[in-house]
Amino acid sequence: MTYSPVTLREAALDSPIFRGTVVHYGEQVELVEKWLEGYLKATLKLCSEVNGKSEAPPPKYDRVC
Image (cartoon, rainbow, N blue to C red):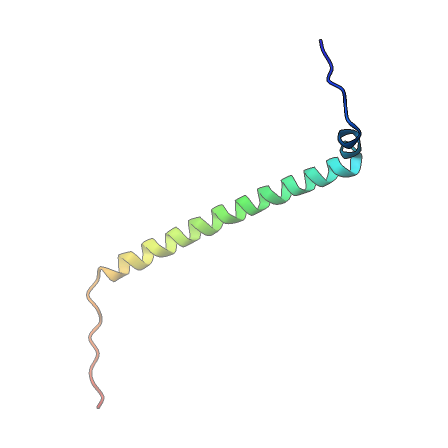
């Protein structure tokens, strides 16, 4: 087994605060992904409902003037 040397920069980045921050941002990315999936699902549902209603003939309006 060979080990590669660790630089000072890599050692400084490998701290509990850094790891906690990475975990936090990872969780935030997952939440945004879930929100986007829900948004996309709702938007597609709305589009399909609008497209389904647009196939019906337009309502007739009586002129008041």
